[in-house]
Amino acid sequence: MLLNPVAAGVLASLELRLVNQSTGLPFTVHKEAPKVYDDDDNNMVAICWIKRSLLESPTYLQNDRLTVECIVTVIKEPQVPKPKSFPRIEVPPSNMAEHFGSLLETDLGADVTFSVGAKTFKAHKIVLATRSPVFKAELYGPMKEEGMGPITIKDVQPDVFRALLHFIYTDSLPPLDDLEADDHSEMIRHLVVAADRYAIERLKLICQSFLCENLNVQTEACIEFITCSNVMDDLLSTQGYKNLKRTCPAVVMDALEKTSKFRKA
Image (tube, rainbow, N blue to C red; front, side, top):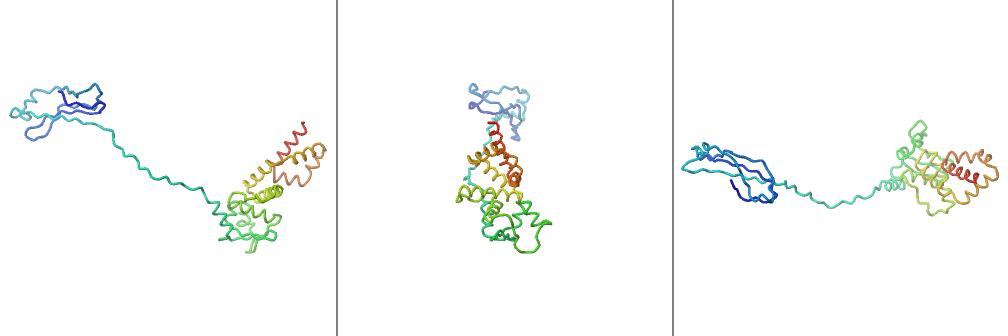
């Protein structure tokens, strides 16, 4: 049986039916699975065998009339709608540090006061306890001080304590650009001690890294003098060296490495 032309590259299936002349209901006599028709398949051809008795049956043949239905089903790819494109929303960077810094500056909700030298600083217990295990023990543990008066901080300069609080709230050092080079280094050295005192390891490492990177020519000349004058043993026995070793181990290691190089030279 020769059927109508089918476009090339189309996936289609074929079904032949005899129509009941009395009821109008079809009866399938041949069915082919879907196949792709290429350029060479100019026509859809169906080859099938149907019993003569079925064709001449009065159910399908009446008044010399036979009705045959040919069902061609073209199978297409599902039409999936393209997702709608929405305007891209730019997510701003985190400003949590800015908000916490503002909280420190405005004293909003502050519940603890520190007396450092001639100055006082207000802060929030929960923030301090979250950032420092030492503050946590002092403010909430058995070490906490009784009463509502200011907590006196000794052996820490006011500017150093202010910088310490700034780091606790913002996780960054305060601007130190207005300080001279020597004052800047001095502030960093004091911050190392304060960071060690309150077990703020990240601040301690930041300061130690800065000190190591800024070992200058004068420092190397001092190391060379110590090595050449055989006073290393006396130096190692001083309390100042012991404090430096405790608070700035990275600086000490760097200095000892430089000393070793001078001795080998």
